[in-house]
Length: 277
Image (spheres, rainbow, N blue to C red):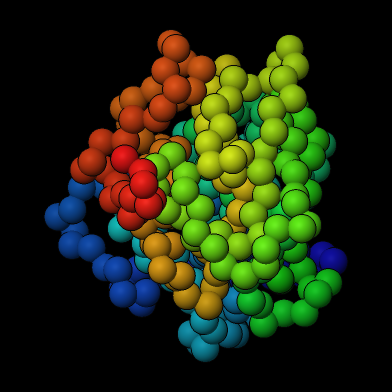
């Protein structure tokens, strides 16, 4: 277990230090500094599905397409854990189908958000994307989101309808079409310390105010399929990131507003849903 943990840390460090030109998204030195976006999760956005360090260094692994998309606007900061030290100095965090968090990590994450952190969490109750690693392999994306304790702390529960139609689908969410597959839904349970949330798309999207911070949660991760972006996935990812980290606008529960403002210059929007605005 210790060796596997060391490998994971090494992969993250090497991926972060790899030049962006290798991924085909080099930027000129004259560009303005990109803001930092901390990232963690079992979906291997930073290093793809590299089996070991040799594959990572040799470049013989499949890179994740979403890294290039995110690095157009953000400087990605890999995190290996969600303790107070790791979160210190970070203002934005993307969690892509994270592993189950420890009690200490739940406490640290909750405190970080309440103190002003901004979080985008993709929590999939039934992952459908392909992986080169078999069931039970820790290098495989987490098959089922195991985040009940922190969601309960925020007054939310993640539900899954096992009778929904199988296969890729498109969901209308806040007026836009987003690719999904066997998605879940969030339900508000409230509580004295819970977040103030606005639910959209039959609960697939939750936008919440929590203390001084804010959270955007999406109950599916099919748009991050390693096999490649599905139609609309690139735009949907940019849209979700814009919803979570836009510099202006209000979030649900704040000052009576119930929408997040996303300046059009910050993020491109996915296709409007049929019949949507």
